[in-house]
Each structure stands twice: as C-alpha cells, then as structure tokens.
Image (cartoon, rainbow, N blue to C red; front, side, top):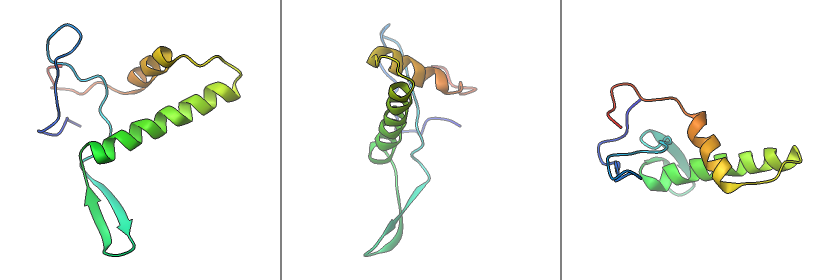
Length: 89
C-alpha cells in the first residue's frame, strides 16, 4: 500500500514531490524454465504492468469505436487508481 523505499518521488509538474501512478512491483514471481521460480522487482516489473494496462485500455477504446487520445488515456489510468493513505505526495 506504499511506494517502495527506492521509488522516485519527483519532481512533479509543480517542482514538488509527485508520483502519478504506482504499479505492482515488490512481490511479483515468475517461472524461469532454467532455474525454476524466481522473483523480480523495480521498473523491470512495474513498467510491463502499466504498459499492459494501457494496451487493454486502448483495445477497449477501439472496440467501443471511440477515438484514441493518449492524454485522456494517461488521465484515465491515473483516475483508475486509489489514493495511498499516509503518503505525502
């Protein structure tokens, strides 16, 4: 429920601390055919989650026959989250 300690916190548009969107990253597991189960974290696991979410969103927008707008999509992604309690940004 909180950003991991090494997560970047800004600067934001106003020059202060800012996080637009947090995606899962600290407790993801994977199945490696060579070494079995493993874990990974950081942008290597967070970015694919947000990219996949954006792809699903784009597909739904296209299926609905609506025009795609990347700024509106970024806003929709931000609005789809929930605020983190006890976090100052």
